Length: 296
Image (cartoon, rainbow, N blue to C red):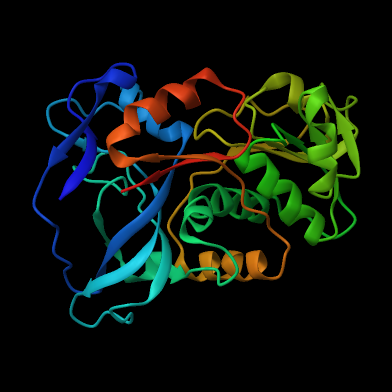
């Protein structure tokens, strides 16, 4: 099968399409025939060497939508099931940007019924990150939240999920994105961080750091979207970061929210697997609203 990997770190030109053996599922694993999977900033970071791991091929791709193709012993899924999954990892020789991927059975969820595979392939990584970040905050309905980078994939999901929970959201983004961010359910909009000590919590999807931390009231909570990227605590603010983990049960919940119209899936364009380097280059340019999706 074909797969996108990096063997040396660098720019988009470092992405290689190689022929490798089709992986076989072990116990409690499933093999998915990949129909689509988004390109995310984490793929660019891995390609550039920010996670280390030199010395062997590293697979690209975390998001996958497709069809169960084979199951290992005691796996709960059936061949032919339409699914989504998160293939989490920065040190594996194969990722989801391939014709087939093997994942643990508990990383898998039934695909949303109301969207095609290309759109479903934008859901797992960013929506799971958003919901796990909100879980870290433990906010009650009526609480106030600033989401930075609210027009992006992660930020957009966070605004929608928080608004669905009854949280008053201020979305931070470029001025041109105000209508989009408000359509996600944001009550307020800003192009900068919110006023000092004005919100109960911040989800820092744009990695603004300390300027966004100033917006949190004393004793509030600040969650960075970059593991280890949170600033030091001040004024009793709890600062932490979300490290996304595969969770089929939460992913199933998110898929249901897609079908209920709570979450919107945005596709900015599609590329063939052989065009992975072009997709990386376009993401690196910035300004993409929605995800670029690879279709093997």
